[in-house]
Length: 76
Image (tube, rainbow, N blue to C red; front, side):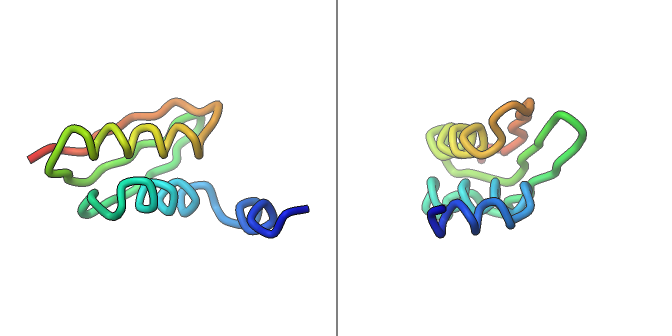
């Protein structure tokens, strides 16, 4: 098994989503918070552009697979 796969399996879902969002957006989301609820993940924070918000959406969707995603990131 690949080392990254082992690390991903051991990491809680919220932390994994947060890490992926931070990596894919290069840290453009301020005050990022990930909340995991039954069947759903919500991400909140602040972004300067809609593009950064969209990048966060794609990163979170890649991480959460079958769960519903709510993106409440505010664009200011």
